[in-house]
Image (cartoon, rainbow, N blue to C red; front, side):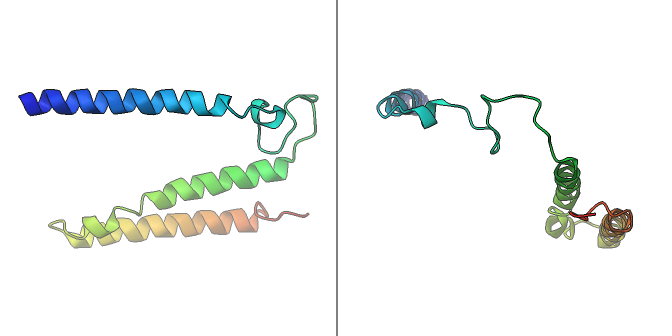
Length: 116
């Protein structure tokens, strides 16, 4: 029990020290570029009605969707250890076929073309 109290005290004090240092250090070297917000290369202090590339937005959304779907494939090495690896293989192949079909559809619809 005493070890638990010691570890809680040490962890809490280290956390508080690190948070205080994190708030104290940035105030030492304050200049204009550091104090202004950064929004992906856009000037946040200018007009909010600047033209935005819809093509860039669509490709970014497509990338995010495919990236999240590919993240579903990450647990496959551990799924091999299941009692029925054949079910895992069927599900993995169906997911890969679904991803390939989605990529082919995007390609045929010219969703991946940067220039028209």
